Image 1 (cartoon, rainbow, N blue to C red):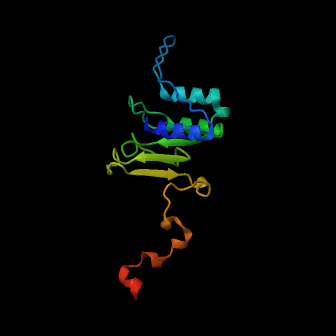
Image 2: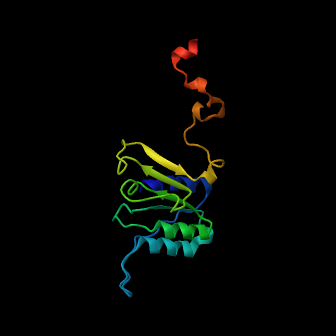
Image 3: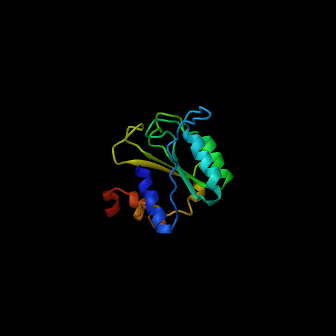
Length: 160
C-alpha cells in the first residue's frame, strides 16, 4: 500500500490514471490457480499502449506470491513501459539482479531482509535516466562545484 500513495500523488499532479491490478482469483472454468504474474501481464496486454509506468513488487506483500519479473520486464520493454520494482519484500532474501531483470528503478526499504535501520532505503536508478531525473536529495554535495577534495578536508587542514 505504501507504494500506492506516491503514485496517487503523481497521477493527481500530471493528470494520469492509476490502475491497480485486482487480486488474482482461481479460474473456476480451468481450475487454474491464481497468479499475480498472469494478471499483470494480461493488464499490460489490455492497456499497454496507454501505460507509462508499471510498479510491482518481486514478492507480493499480502500472500508472498512470487511475481515473475523477467516476464513482466520483457512485456514492459515490448510496450516501451517504464518498470519500477518494489524490492522491499524480497531483496536480501531472494535473488535479484538489475542485469537479469532490467528495470528503470528499484526501491527497497532496508529494514526487512537487508537488516538495515527503520526509515532507511536503497534506490537504484537505471543509468539511462541519470541525466533525466531530479535527485530527491538536494544539498551542496550533489552539486558539481562541491566535488572537490577541499570540502572533504579535516578542519585542521582547512586552517593551514
